[in-house]
Length: 544
Image (tube, rainbow, N blue to C red; front, side):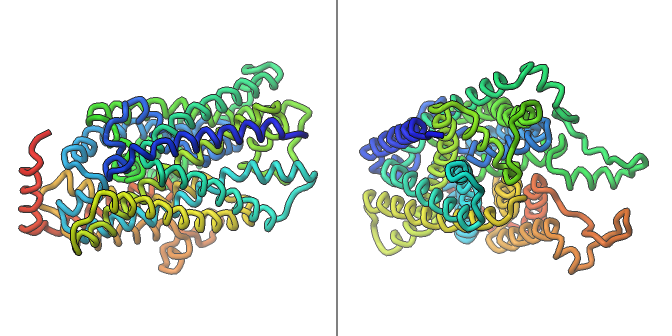
């Protein structure tokens, strides 16, 4: 099997992306130009960039994995909560950030509470985003491992998988870091726009091609879809279940309507309301109205997009069930769609779909790198330099560029570590791994911002930090079976065996972290000095 034409398509894609990104250097010479594109981005480009940021390679392969294994759209329920959350974000957070004129979101927390809250929140974001991005990044290399296996004619061992994964992580990160560090946010936005086009083309072709290869088309597919088709109420299977059994089933199940309306709403409020990664691109719009339009429309589009990814997984499952083509026994769930791409799709189109996978990886990575570099420079490095004397605009931009490069290195380290973990654990699922990491800390971040926005007299530096630690501890405890056993928080199951009392599924982690952190932080009053500083800032900026 020749991959020559596919390689040509991939090389053309990389050259186009690098060219567009590097061409934006001349427009990124100021802090606001580098971080926010001078707030001159049209709403439709912001919309495309938001989609590129949230549709990572984990989604491109993880959502089809869910469709392949479950045979239904229960995973796509999550999109319901994302729409509701984006409406809340558009009216609660975006106007505030525009009015405050912030570049790093965590600047606002210093105005409202004090410098330690800003530093703690920014540090939490930096650590969490590096870990989450590193785990996402390895996913794009799955298709390369399979291509190598098909080329040599036999499966590769864990160590060979690891080295291919690691090489791909380094390559993708280096290429993305080049145009992100040089071109800044303009490079991110316009390369994202191209990448979304590649993604949509790859997704559309995949659905059309799969349906054309299944005898009987959609009528055959419909007969293989498993219940519940979309809405899962998490009703226990036991005939005489109690209310507590139902609640426990809701909290321990990953894809249910309850997780969609509640868990997913909190998740999206965190990822789209207080995460520098996503909000920074929202702030590139010309004004808050255009930003809100892009944000809400991205949620509306999210449901059909995610549903289409899940559909790909369902179609792949039906294809292998209804044709004479069989999967090798060593191909696991997350590798099924890449295997189909490499073995069944025509030359050239294989390259397009693989480019789509790379586009999702590079789109979300470029966003993360720009946000990490901006936040680290604005919250840690530049304030310390300014304390020693004036810092020129050129020096500030230079710090932001080198901060971007620094975090590219950190992400490579996490990506390589994730590659080692996934290479030796074939049963590990993609989506819970990626979203689960955010769940440990982003609830605490969201709670501090909610406290700042919804109250005027509650919360201070000491209380906020203590509350964030409590929120993290609560999520850790209810997510870890060993801790619950160690503290004796156990029950007897139907077989009479001792098991943890309650292990939260990943969609509920941010909800728990938010509620615990908010409750603890609200117990501490805001100091008179902080209240006066916040009031003075409001008078300084005036209504906008």
